[in-house]
Length: 370
Image (cartoon, rainbow, N blue to C red; front, side):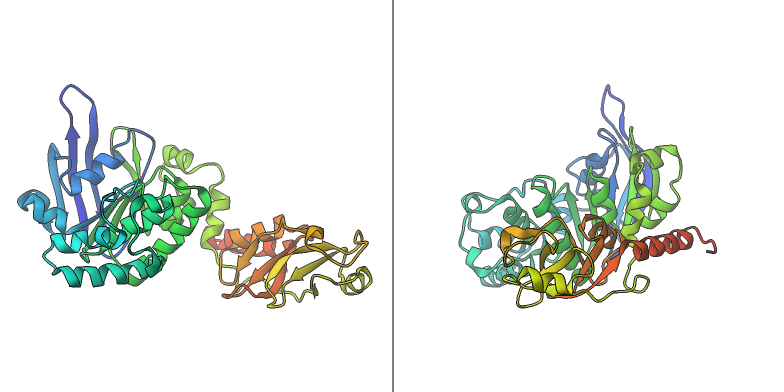
C-alpha cells in the first residue's frame, strides 16, 4: 500500500503544487492520478521515490515513511516507467532490461535470464534481445521500459504517462498488454495520465486532482461515472460519461446471439442473394474469421475483396456493452459481429437487443427497478 498523509509541496515564491493530499493506493492494485494540467499529478508521483521532496506530510510504503529510507535503496524498491522509455542507447534490449536486476545485486547471468523471460512476457520475441533502442518502434521501446521496471521484481511501480508517446492503435495494444501483466503480477502501482479514458480503462482506483494539487475524488471507475462527487469531477470526466459506463457492463449474459448466414470470396451473386437475410451478408475466410459485409443486391460478379464493406467493428465474446454497441452501430447491416477468442465468428447481435441490455444496465447502475 502507498499512503499519502496530508502531503504538501510548496515551491519558494510560487503557489502550492500539491496541497494537503491524503489518499491510499491499495496493495496489489493500480491507482491512476488524473486531472487538468498543473494539478500536481507528476509532482505527487515523483515525491514517492523522492525525485521531488515534499514540503510537509508523509508518504508511506507499506507503513514505512519514505523520508526515513536511504534514497538509493528506496528507488531500487520501486519500478519506474516514463513517457519515452528512457532506454540506454548503447545497450541492447536484454542489457537494458537486466539493468535494474543488476543494480539490486543479481548476478549477471541470472539478470540476463530474467531479462529474456520478461521480454516474452511483455509481448516481444527473443529476436529483439540483441537489438538496440534505435532499432525499435516507440511501442516496442515502451514494452522494454516496462520489462526493465519489472526486472528487479519490485513491490511498487510508478508510471508517468507511459503510453502517451505512441499512436492510438499501439497505445490501446499496450494498455491491453499491461492489464494482462497486472492481472498476473498484482503489483502496487500508481500511474499518471492526462487521458480520462485511459484512467477509466486501467485503474482499479482513479484519483481526480484539482488545480493546486488537492484531491477532488478517489473511487473506482464505476463509482466515478455513476456518482461524481461534484461538478468539477463531472465536468472533467466529460459529458459522455453515460456512454463510458458501458465499458464496465458485460454483454454476454444480457444480449442474445443470433445466427447469421455467411459467404466466402468467390460466391456468385445468385448464391449470395439466396442466403441473405436482407441486402447484407457477412463474409468470412475459410477459418470462419469475419472479413466484412457484402451487398447482395448490388453484386454483379463473383464476390471479390473490393466488394466488401469494412466499416463494421468486431466485439470479442465477453467484452463490454460499449464494444458490442459500437459493433452494431458501425455495421452496415445494423447487426454487430461477435467473435471468439481465436477471432472466429460466433454470432451477431441486433441493435434493438443491445439497446434493451443498455437500459437494463442503466437501471442496475442506479439501483432502481425496471
